[in-house]
Length: 443
Image (cartoon, rainbow, N blue to C red):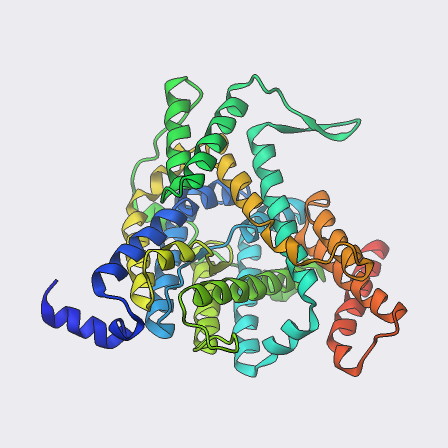
């Protein structure tokens, strides 16, 4: 790299001032990409079940991750990479499209509007009020519940868990090829992760796919590479159907869930990554917080326009930070690699569900960590947290879990005699949720 370019990068991103150098930032960006590149394979597999074209979703995933990561690096100058979020893509497919029967273009419209709402809340400063209204133990339970939801989907896709008329669910055939291949992939990914091998998830997915091909368990008809096919999801969002109200009040719930989960997932990730990078202030606040949230909101809107579910910050960014990344250049390098990856999009269908299932199971297990923040011996925290944690996977709906948790917390606050004027937003949310369930029951 030429001295003038290196000097300009150092000046633009304050690299030396943050104790790093250009070479380290580039390596960190590559590291982050390797740890989160699995989303290029997993996201199309999940959204494809909603009836979306695999090629288009894969391309949209790459484009959205590239745009969001580069924007975050340029605007906020933090080593935070973004891509379509795990959990939110599952909610998009299994709860919204398959569960509620809403067409995927309308669901994309809901994602876009959640990004608009996120941007409006950020500019108005309301996000602090919402954050203060939801207790930490409930947020921890949401994260854990989404983790169980993701893992359950992985177990189901693998055939490890199957439906049963008598018990709802049961153990599948452990001798079947998909199950054995999934267990192989999970063992490999877990083993590599224990040894802190970078790109463990991606290696596991690729290795499981290759093994499936070798044993004859992979059936794939290559899709001809056609650049025009990459636009099969772009600009297909249907805002008109959202505003028409033909899908009822459920659309408002969908937008709320997309907004809620993205808001708190983003806040939690950026707090963890910036703290590990030494960028957080002594009081724990994050510099350029508004810029970070604005970039995240813009990324969700662009992602929905391109044809993918909610874009959010990735905790895998911590891997790049561990490799020395301290500035936005790390995120930009990650984004550029996603941009290059877009040309492999037509072959996303090569990866079967049993190869991506181990990634879902592992990511789900890692999302259990926040549950230690819940005081399980205290009913005031344990009951709302447990309802949230259990009902997200058991009802196959993040919205239901969040709703029960908020209502339970509000009721216990009343019973405890702790209702305060400052809790007005919490109780307003609880009342709206009760009305929502009453509306559904009466419909």
